[in-house]
Length: 219
Length: 356
Image 1 (spheres, rainbow over the protein chains, first blue to last red):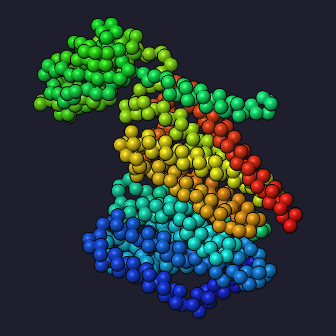
Image 2: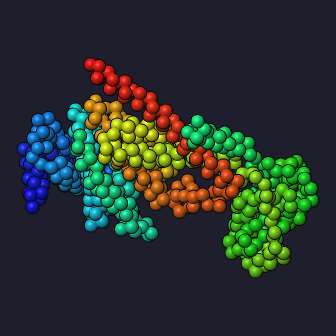
């Protein structure tokens, strides 16, 4: 019960921080709309391939924006403070949940912006939601982990992108491929079996983080 | 001394063996071109066969040349004349009908000799027919006796179209990747041991193995790129395995950057060990799972079998398996040298710290 309370407490803290720093949210939102508008303005007639590619690449950039600020508040003096009060695993878990929620929100807003500005014959469906959610969970865990590593090396936030990019690439690739199939499906396409690699990556990442995070924290 | 260093000696001996055997063993004969290659059924045609490593001048009259549409329908060519050891003119009267309802059919050319063995170039000839009579085509394209092709029993590497002499690269390119994975696997073992015991030795070993593995990976990429240039006519393609291998390298370059960017030595060791474990687990789906889900030019991906009889025969296997062992042992040797250098650096820095 204490753990759940602590997780909720940390989530509330992160949420309040976001609310009190709305300019961060506004900046990312502005970036998303700007990107969508740029594509709308310059791309001309859209193909499914270009649409899906633009969406997932914009999503990747947003992930890195979010990744940069995951453990910012826990750096410096407050790091010692949180380390003393809350078990690192709980802190890491709550960060994961928060980042996944935040990324899910951003990715849906981005999808909406793309859908309005770059109209395609694509309907927002349950399939899209599942796909985006699975990608967000996988990237959210990876970003939290790399951000966690970077937080141990204060002032080297650039590492987040260097460490996360190659690992996120297959997830973005899978999102792009499956998204493309959702827009222009071929008869042999089976949505649920195409998700197995993503589910596998999610499970792998989760299992690994459960194993690795306590080991890093020892330092 | 031999007892202590047997694995190094074995590595060097195997390396010499794979260099000598892998580069000097000739290829089996094979056909690389047939011209012209488009014919109309019912015509009397002559075509030129060009072959590699062949000896058409050896008992020329014992050669048999077939056109093969499928396993049931073949045609024995009536006349052939060797122009040189590698060129042969073949004449045949094509039947009026083909055993197919299609107007265009591809046929393979098979050349067989009791001593030289048999060689084939698949689907090289395109046959056309103006009118269709499957029954008559079947009768005309069926030979009465069993084909009875000769298998040349010799220690030669198989001749594969597209690959030609580059088939030898299997021993170096693939073995380098195998050795790289052994290095990465062992480094993860040492990383886990380090995280559990905090013994610096394990971290030094792990780092040495990763660095050696990365060097092998780069060599694997270079040999693969050279191979691609000669077989696929491009230094780099959009093949999934190729690009996933590049990502693997990026993930491990990130490891090097991470390790170099942390100043606190204890923290550097712990974090890089954790990232090393994460990296290998991230690499497994990249190399072993994702390429199997889509089409790839590499064997063993996109549904085509790896190391099956189409890719490898026993002549290749007796070099390939020792090559994997040789590269692994040499890799371990290089890693052990790197480990000893780093260990010396570590001991010197410890000594300096004590003196200070």
